[in-house]
Amino acid sequence: MPLYRDQAIVLRTYKLGEADRIVVLLGRELGRLRVVGKGVRRTKSRFGARLEPGMVVDLQCYEGRTLDTVTQAVTLETYGDAISQHYPSYTAAASMLETAERLTEDREPALQHYLLLLGALRSLALQEHDPRLVLDAYLLRALAISGWAPSFHDCAKCGAPGPHVAFHVVAGGVVCSVCRPPGSAAPAPETLRLLAALLSGDWAIADGSQEWHRREGAGLVAAFVQWHLERGIRSLRMVPR
Image (cartoon, rainbow, N blue to C red):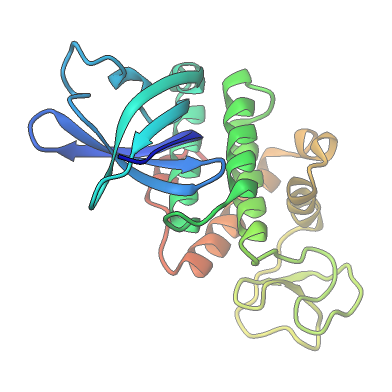
């Protein structure tokens, strides 16, 4: 049967039968994959522990009629172990993995999503920044890769140069006084500056931000994600804010 290999991040698993498991992965070359791990729930499984969420593996599979089957899994990175020991990092990682699955399609190459998720998991494992900031930065950039980049300076509707004081999720970011729809939020200028820094990767500004602005920004990010995905990320409810 045809064999293929790819480097992949395990996004999610669920049970199949008595001893098998379906594994959802994000491949570097092949995009989102759904494969079967035969017998991985048995204690004597050769690679059951390597197919857990957050693991980075070099995977070999053979193609089946409905689902492909894993024949080999070599661990490349074990970010899941370090992340699981810190609750804020664990919940942030769970939200990232769920978002990555929602934003990608089966067998559609998604190299940018793969690299973004890989870097975010590495940052959580090494505790380089506040996990909540890493999560919000990931969410903003993942949406930008998918074509929904928010604007935090110029008007999202007419392009009028900023800065502007109103933010509207449906409009796509900040809006000027002329384009401002009813119900627009009015976040603090420091909050918008923080979100712009997270989107661009300016960690000097992000790490120096105040707690209130981080909480306000997280609320805007969650609303923005929920609007574009048409439903919320369930794991976000578990993130300590």
